[in-house]
Amino acid sequence: MATAPISDHSVQQAFALALAASAITKRASVHTLRHSWATHLRESGVNLRLIQIWMGHASPNTTALSTHLTQTAEPSALTAFDTRTSGMS
Image (cartoon, rainbow, N blue to C red; front, side, top):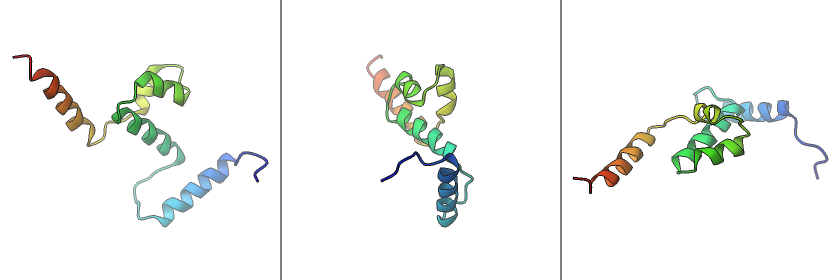
C-alpha cells in the first residue's frame, strides 16, 4: 500500500515512457491530459462552471482557454442549432 502520493516527476516520467511506447507521434504532456479532459467534458455537455470548479480555476475565462474545439464540436453545435431553429419559420 502506498504511504505517500506519487511525485510529479514520476507521473511525468511514466507518461513520457507510455507515450514513447505508443504509436502516438504528436507532442503531449501530462498537462495535455488536463486540457483533453476539460475539452471532452465540455463536448459532452458538462456546464463550463462545473468544469471550472473541478479544474480549480478562479476564473471561467481560464477554463474557457483550457477547453479546445475538436473536429466533433462544430458538427454537434450545428446539429443543435438546426434542431432549435427548425421550428422558428
